[in-house]
Structure formats: structure tokens, C-alpha cells
Length: 199
Image 1 (cartoon, helix red, strand yellow):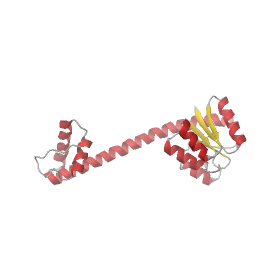
Image 2 (cartoon, rainbow, N blue to C red):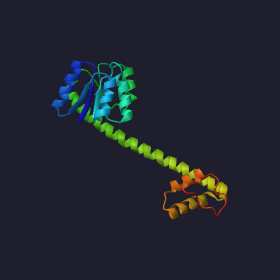
Image 3 (cartoon, helix red, strand yellow):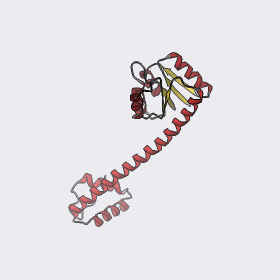
Image 4 (cartoon, rainbow, N blue to C red):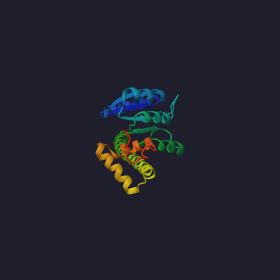
């Protein structure tokens, strides 16, 4: 894996770099502050990031926020701070593991594997939520179109839905696209003979 390392403590950063390379990873950096970490993440597209929390110019947590908003990747927080406020803030970000210094090889290897696995699961669940939200929005659009047809054409709910379905089949278009055209057209369907508008 290509792993971004960011830590303002030069000795810690170098030790972590060497350890990651020994176990077979390619190290991006190390960055010495949060700003540099964000720039490296943007330019090098790492597979995973290990960032210290307390860094100058831009904190590790702020850097994580910027990095993952631009391109989600698994992130491990590496820090000497175990105070609850740091843990709570990290928990609000897409952080998939939390290690305290000094890190040992027997801790780092499973931390990377666990962070990667959690990230894959998070990505899958996030995709499912996005699909569900899209389907809900499409359902709302169809319901709005049905309401317009019921009002402007004097149809009941079943007939309005059947009209949308017929137009969808006739035009070889998804029903949500037909519904979108109806909603965009407002009350242009007041006359029974008037066809549904093109999207």
C-alpha cells in the first residue's frame, strides 16, 4: 500500500517510515505539518494515511477532515494524546483506528489491516445509504407528479400512476424521468389531450 505519514516529530516520523517500509509498504512523506499532509494526499493519492494529531499550521484532525472530504481513504490517528476530547473529535471524522505512541510493529500491522477492512465496510454502507436516499427522492418525485396529474386531469391515484407508467413505456424512459417532466411542466397537463412534456 501507499501510506501517507504525517508527524512533526522527525524521529517518530522516520521510525514509522522505516517500519512501514520493512513490512512492505511504500511511504508517502513523511509530512511535517497538516498543510503538507493535505498537499501530499492531493498529489500522491495514497491508499491509507497515518497522521499525528498535534501538528503545526494545521492540526492532524483538520488535515484528516480536508483529505477525506476531497477523497475518502482509511485513516489511522497516531498520537501521544489519549485525552477524551481528542478521541471524541477523531470519532466524528472518518478515522478507522487510533494508536498511541510509541507504536510497536505488532500493533501497527493489525491496525492497518483493521483500518482497511473498516474503510471497505464503511464505503459499502455509505453507498447503500446514498442509493436509498436517491430512491426516496425518486419516490417523492413520482408522488408529486401523481398529485399534479390528479389535480390537473381529474384522475384518482391509481389512474395517475398508470398514466405515468404508460408514458414511461411509450417513451422508453424511466418513470422518474417522466415524473420529473411532469413536475417541471407544472399544470401544462390540464387538458386531457395534451401529451406529457419532454424532459
